[in-house]
Length: 354
Image (cartoon, rainbow, N blue to C red; front, side):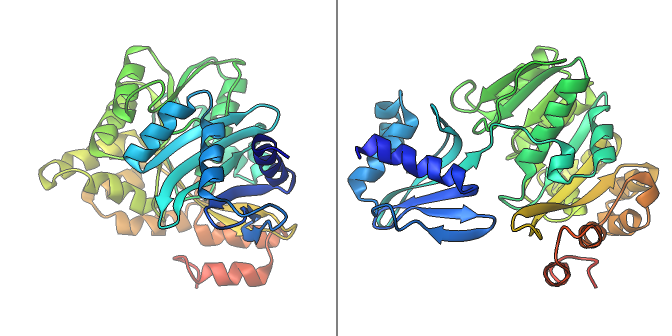
């Protein structure tokens, strides 16, 4: 089997086995992450430095020469890869003590629905109806934020006549226009930075902007401006707990501007979703979600800088569509989607899980 055929076989095998990630390292066999567990694929040979460069060249084709030169200069690169006849992957290439390495995230071509993801449907449908404002998705790496955001964009696409612009690094899901018009831009390929892509989106009458991540102060400032001026902004942050997402945004600003930012957030924030992936009873994974819906009480706490009191509101506002992480996990146990023992172990790690 030639090198390209073997690379395709490794990638296809990962998809067939429902792997979410593939780790490729010099001196090691490929390793798949299957429903949260790592499994070494000893049926394939260990990677050599040469075979790793062949893998990276294959994934970056037809720009392999410029990509490899860029990789050697920058030392780590994020990119999206479309392999004909196999699928799409989100890739991070980098150097280790052993040489070039690569971690691939398998991107499903099918954009799952809220029901398929076990997301709170009523709340997510209400997000799609919002004319403007900011909706934040938060959680650790690999917690399903991107998939949940894609599911929301696809729901808007199917049910609303909107102009949607996505700015991603890299593009993960590919959308086809339905009721909406969708334009997708990848940082580094279609726009130099998140900031430039976001500035451009403000000039093209976008109704909805999806930001892959709020990475820096300028992007946060632009996202707030977009939400204030009539755009629905969907963005992600790496935090745990809905109140911490608010704190992260405020803390990005200098102390002299934080009071103003709290006022702005109290007015434009619509919701925050915190996600964790739990092992499910069918051997897969299922998201548990904490949901904050902004109302007058929440807005008042944001303005006063008393975000530590927000969990109290969330825990007592189920009628408004809110839920704590603990409540969500208990619901998954009740629905027999998560084993009680696994749930109790995870509840000890989150607030409100006593």
